[in-house]
Length: 138
Image (cartoon, rainbow, N blue to C red; front, side, top):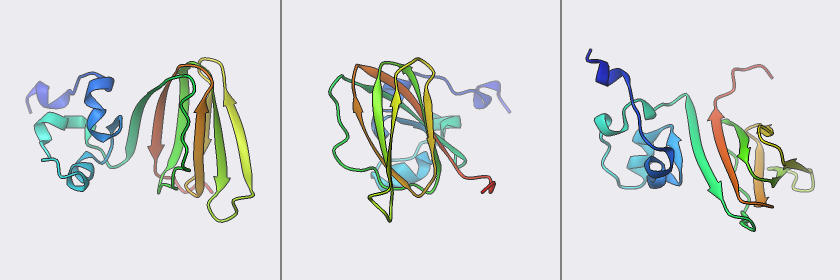
């Protein structure tokens, strides 16, 4: 195997634009869902069924108006800079909700698959968000 096949490099901001800044994940499926030709060489190691990774850069005052639907994966957002508030609710019991403030570099929040989320940016903020399948440690 050529060493080039073992390495994928790029820029999270420009490379993630096609899929709402999701950079690593089920790119073959995302291409199919969005009518984009899948190019294995172009996407390289970014195409992965076990983990998804998103680069998120938001402006002060940005709000996610709609609740993000549950995923089939555990989610985690890590604050790189900024200040924001995340809102969580149970998908079946909307009155069961919780708020988490991420205000210091390195603050994070992790949520299970059955949780919907929303957020607001209290300052310009940058995040790394990951999703992965549960390892069965319920």
